[in-house]
Image (cartoon, rainbow, N blue to C red; front, side, top):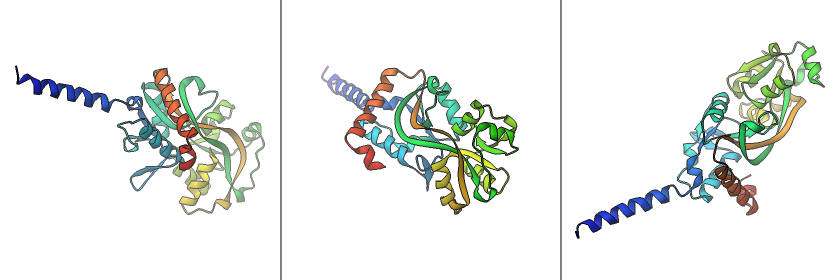
Length: 248
């Protein structure tokens, strides 16, 4: 019998360790992001950006065993489709729109995002409405399932106007090379990429605003609502204590 005491102690210790490891509700979630600087992007093997810093602060504040090294960095369309079908997945940074509202649970906001039609300044293109776009023969590069592509489709833009790109760098290259006349994308991100790739931002201009909305964490719609509420509460507390402002 005396030899059973260490065994009981070991079992107890393992149980306590397991409880400690699962103390954070956020440990139940799988996080997915994409290249969308300055909000979330990978450079030199490390995930960076404002939204990434917010997530890291949330994980730390909640005592999570996770860290940002475990965030999956996928092309947008793959991440978007995964968040639609796999419970407990979180996609960020995701623009919250009317069309997407019932597809996900939402935690945020993180930042405000303006999606525009961008053109080369020397093109002289002027667009003041979706009707004007459809009446033209301008080609628009988009990224599948991105907010720019979705807004154009929802607005009735003809599919033969749209040219898909595999990522934002490819889309920018297509615009710069004149393979398309327009690019539908987040304005801040587009200009960030221009600067990073050594292009002069003054050579481009936003000619028409497609949408202005906020970026959020988008959670699979069957995620436990108590978990969603907990994640929102963690974010709200960090905003209240000044942490969010500090990482901007």
